[in-house]
Amino acid sequence: MKIFCIGKNYAAHVIEMGGDPNAKPVVFMKPATALLLENKPFYIPDFSEEVHYEVELLIKICKNGKHVQPAYAHTYYEKIGLGVDFTARDLQAKCKANGHPWEVAKAFDQSAVIGKWMDKSAVNVEDLSFSLQKNGEEVQRGHTSHMMFNIDQIICYLSQYFTLQTGDLIFTGTPEGVGPVKAGDQLQGFMHIGGKDELCFDFQVR
Ligand code: MG
Image (tube, rainbow, N blue to C red; front, side):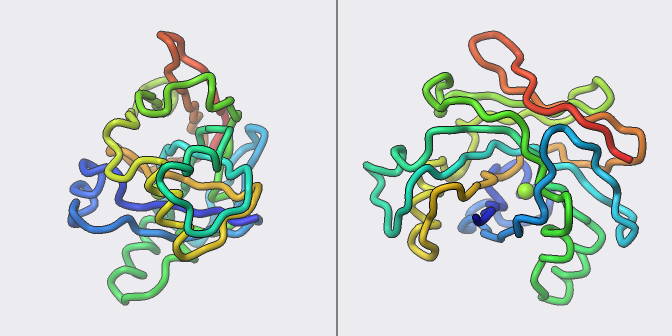
């Protein structure tokens, strides 16, 4: 199982990170040991002074594929979810400054939070909003219409380089509003479906 992550997929977040909103998506991966499931608490690692939340829509690949064509991309996933791409922002800044890979900042244990999965058929993927609350206050809100590369385009793009396999996960990028966590914070993620707030994850930072 592979966990793909897309960076730079919402223009406003790219600008807040000082990047070029016209660039191609950044792709990186996390190992299976990064998964944090079932609303278990997230423990801030001792190697970082600045761990940031990044709420992101997720998809789960449902069949194997290579060089997926745009007309068929939507058939490669049936489940959509919400998660957090935890990022050691201080380490990431050093990696960027040195031109090094990001793994120590992005792929550490518990850095891939996965919430509840929904059937794709239950949502309008092209018109879906989601949000993150920290201690009951909204800190991020995203909408799929603001993605620079939509889910089908991401599937096609990734499959040019990597064989997609059943069970692979894709983090589709974070909207603006990323920020730090500290011990005691409570993070809740919501999808907003048909006027209702669907709680997708709810866990504590320790
Ligand atoms: Mg991210």
